[in-house]
Length: 399
Image 1 (cartoon, rainbow, N blue to C red):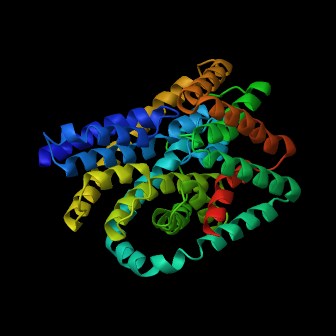
Image 2 (image 1 turned 90 degrees about the horizontal axis):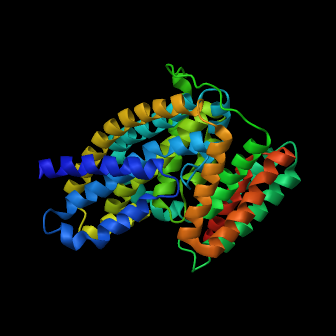
């Protein structure tokens, strides 16, 4: 079984590279395919091995998906907030450093998960029922704080938050739309930014590939916020890494772009890893990949959990090496390519993916979200207010 687990980890990492680097391809798609053919696979191996394959794909994906978000401006729901400071760093020639910052967050997240797995299990068992009652209030407080912190125009901040929230509610409640977050976020944070880059004739400078220097204190603050917010996100319904990033950013002040990228990268990974612990503790799956694992495993024992945690450590090591090497390739290539053509190609790719996966309604949401995403930079406010598209639906869910 040891050899089977190693093979599962290896193939999981390879598939994770494809899903992580390909905009619009989510790990949930891979999970569904694996579950659909699980009856055939179980003739050759055990459910735990298949589960480890899915977990390996998911963890590798969280390490690598920052690359297309930062270099191509093509985010998914988990990395959408990394586009904002990541793109600024890319235009400063520091795209390589931006990805490394998310990598630090991802790697430390796995280490924290393994070290604190048992204490987290005990705490969650006792506090889960109580905290779940106040999550709506926590999100309302965070949202109000974000709006009032906008010094240039609180009216526009509220207006954008409200409009994006209404669009989010409408999109998420369309039963005919299987993947509503693809057009929603691709328009707000992807195409809108690419169109502005084209209009401003942005050129990607030569990217600096050098050792990353960052204060240990900033890493500690970012990871502390990541761990607390990640636990909230992993064990409470309807919360994702993007909402947790907003909560986490309020816990530590003066994170700056560097600290925020560590926070976002860490939350992307820690929510996935802690979901495995959540499956054991409260017998609930908080994302598509772990839902697939729960369907494969009739019972998820403490032994299974320990094996999965060990597998995550191995995957984290492999993914760290892969991320560094692939990011270097992107860094060398980006300054040499025709950026306007790259932007147009990515816009076309997103439109085609939306048409295939979401149909005409998805294209309509993509168009509306793109227009909405262009407003914040035009009126001079932060694009983080567009996260009302997720925050408002979740607040409505809890109240």
